[in-house]
Length: 205
Image (cartoon, rainbow, N blue to C red; front, side, top):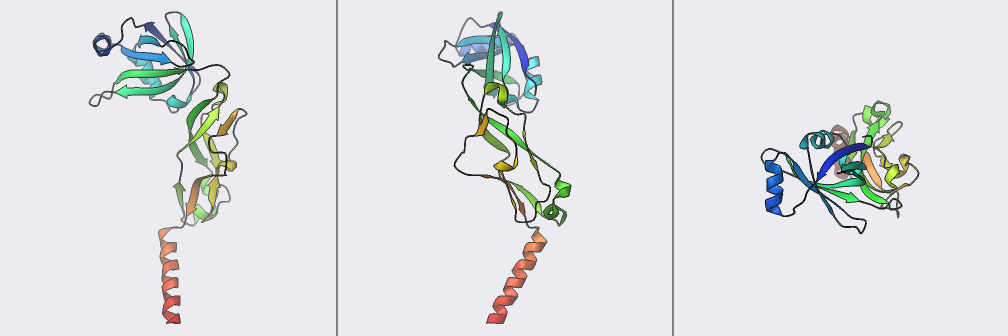
């Protein structure tokens, strides 16, 4: 998702009653916080917000929000939704210093599954991590992490080192080459292995 810009208005009053009044007026209340500065309360038209919410990577991409003529670079941190209508009720945005690294969850994607001998034999792609937590420079947050499955056999593991991270981004886990996915044996092959093991045990007896 490319860097997006939202436009909002200053929200003068805080509190639950004030927030309900904002919603009755057809707007969504929100707050910008962080970077050791005073919070900025705002209200925003829900339509452009909902459009962004439906795009992948909303919580892992820097947004620019203009509040009454002042622009802020922010990272979405939380959105509260109505339990019945699923409409946004409140949005929290994190403001950050330009030289500050951000911790984000980036989705993973696998390509060339048809070039994996293990999957062609009926193996199953067992995804261990659907997202990977990264520490990133604000301008270095990747859209996704792509893993090429070419050549992977049954029993192989796909590690974080199998993808290329942009400069300025690194996993929060740094003490090991952790597993992102494995190529698991198909159930038919497991049954054959179990049967073979039972036969060996019977022979030994």
